[in-house]
Length: 271
Picture 1: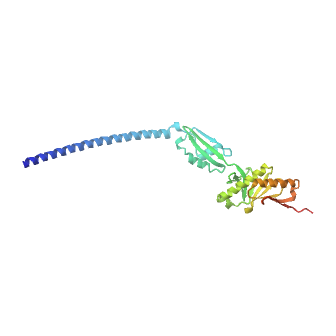
Picture 2: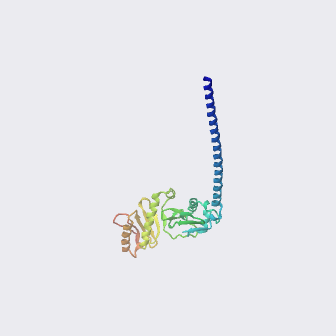
Picture 3: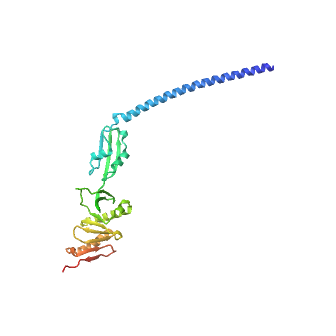
């Protein structure tokens, strides 16, 4: 009986081993089939992706056919396109708006540039140019815009019909100090108020902590304005100038930097 039982157990173990090998073999076959299918599927995906990529990056459908430049007056459209590195026929997907805008913004007259793609074939470049408001004299002459930014040396033949800003030092501007730019903006605002009041300025002189001194094209009088409270100071200045109308050449300077008063200095009479 013991021998018989042992033989039966061996046979059961053999059957279990055979069934296990069968399942393992079947599983291996299934895995191989699945792997082969997956490989073919990936190859198909790569083929489709390659075809799509070729269509996107090589198809004439996405070729640049129109380049629009808007807002450029001082800087010509052809110059802007050349700076951008754009050309007709290039692929729209290879146009990099941010990089192109950065290139264009390096031009001294360009304050800001926006570039966008309008699919399928148009590139639009919008340019905001700087507007010169004055000229800074520091050995050479430089344009300054309404933000108080000195942005370009005045070239031969360019317009110089702007108020002249004097008394500034290059190191004050080279640091990009917001305080210096604010002072320039304040001084130019005063210049605009004077122009609205029929006083055409020839020079705005920065006199350190004392403020600004104005010189008009009408009479050789130094107008010491100090800092701030421009509206009230211009009104006081007008009242005094009205009293000296026709005799302005007798005045050496008018100082309105003090609160609620005007200090007049008179030239000595010629003997």
